[in-house]
View 1 (cartoon, rainbow, N blue to C red):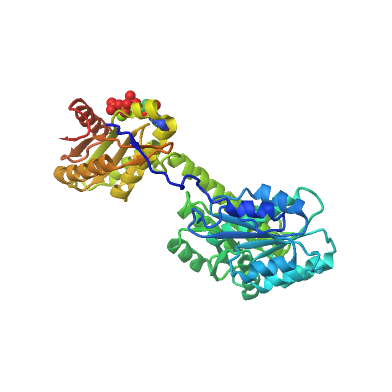
View 2 (cartoon, protein in one colour):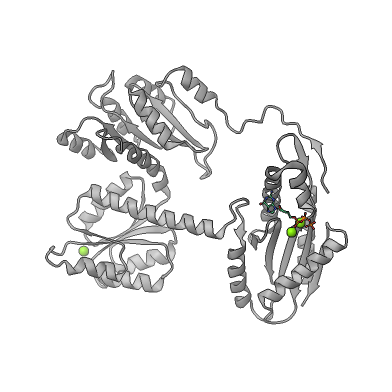
Length: 464
Ligand code: GH3
Ligand code: MG
Ligand code: MG
Ligand code: MG
């Protein structure tokens, strides 16, 4: 089952091109340093962060804290002249961290160039004068950070990356005052968020039904029609599981402290009293967006297999149970179990790492051929797929296609080896109404066992 071939690696062995990094090192800190230059981030976009500072230590610290991921480029400039050289290259800059005092521009002229070029810019400076801070914020910098303690550096690095991350975040503002809506919108847009607006509770509910990606919303108390508290109660009742963070907002005089309590009790996660500082408002939105992102990350980790990116056993069992229950009685439903043949030998001969690569490639081939069906890695080298509404013949033909595709894969497991593997597949198709999940699973396993006993690399199909 395992063929050993010589791979022709050529010079493509290095995963990343480090030329930029070397050039940067030899040119000193002020040179343009490119990490992973030319690689596209997993989000599908090129991300270019820029650090503008004449202090090599600041650049070193931020670079260390950012730990550029694949697809992220960290550009650096130590003077206004170097910045202008970068801007002249027309590289789209995702976000910049800028010092105000540079050898050839002592009063923030270079930060001005960045704003002029439309780059979302954070100031990181030792200048702590409050008036200067306000001037820069009103000129449109996203944040103004003082270098007055080492704890500001992680904050600056986080904020820089957040300006990329925010581009995919949708914030819904529910506010009937046009002036307040405009102020909140502009500060959130400056922070690169996508802002949606609703002037009433009814409009807000409409947004929530049409757009599933809204992660944070702010809700004003006094609205025409349904008020803010009722809106939040309705949302929490209608969408109890939805990952959505809600910030209550109200201008009712502070002595009515009961209101903030009512907001939290109604299901708000946070509360702000009007008039509020727009910077504070942004920080709260940031924190709430981060909380939702963390929640979604944990959910993805709990439902997916880390190695192959397919769903895991837990997800598969829960969702196939639901699908079987929802399957109309007259529809057939099939379960297919797939197991790699003699997989232990791959590990034994080529190592566990090679085994992992094989698992990933087999998973990828299955996904290409079987999505959008419910597919999962349900065991070490075992996969399952649920196929509703097809005949036994159709399902057998489909899985035979998968068997052939996998047999034809040539898997480059690095270290000069190219392998091929085969799979055995067992199918159970229900002809009866109300077949339960356990019967489907155990019968598919029985079919798989028969396929193994009959010589492997084949499809066996049973009906119940
Ligand atoms: P058969 O044809 O009968 O299925 O033989 P087999 O060798 O494929 O089956 P067996 O169940 O004996 O071995 C499965 C192997 O899969 C043993 C285990 O170490 C390996 N395995 C399970 N999970 C992983 C993993 O995540 N990575 C790697 N590399 N190996 C894994
Ligand atoms: Mg109002
Ligand atoms: Mg096996
Ligand atoms: Mg097995």
